[in-house]
Image (cartoon, rainbow, N blue to C red; front, side, top):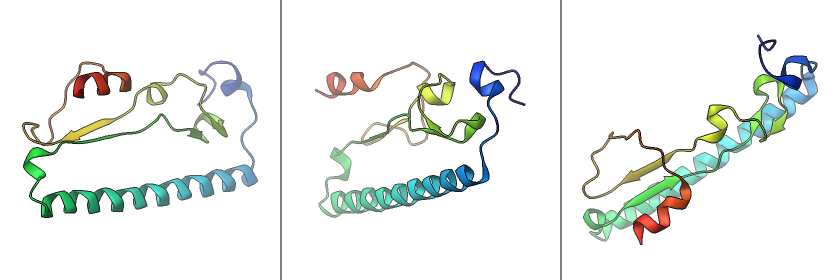
Length: 117
C-alpha cells in the first residue's frame, strides 16, 4: 500500500496504462544495454586471461543510482531517498580478493581513486 509513504507518493493517481507501457519499454531497453555491457566485460576478461595477466589484474565494477521506473507510482525520477536509491554496488575481483566476500563498511565512489592510487 502507498498510503504510508510520504507526500505525493501516497496521494498521486496511479500511473496510466500508456505510462506503464512506456516505463516497461524503457526498463527492457536498459536491460538490453546492460546485457551488451556484460558482453564487453566478458571479452575484456577473456583478453586479460589470454595475455596471462589475470593474476596481476584487478577489475572494479560500479554504477550510478539509476532511476525509479514505476516503483511507488513514480514515473521516471531520481529524487526520492529510498535505500536502493542511495546505495550503489561496487564489485571487485583480482589477486587476494576472495570470491563471494563482502564487507559492511560504507564506502563511496570518491573513495575508489585515492584507494587505488
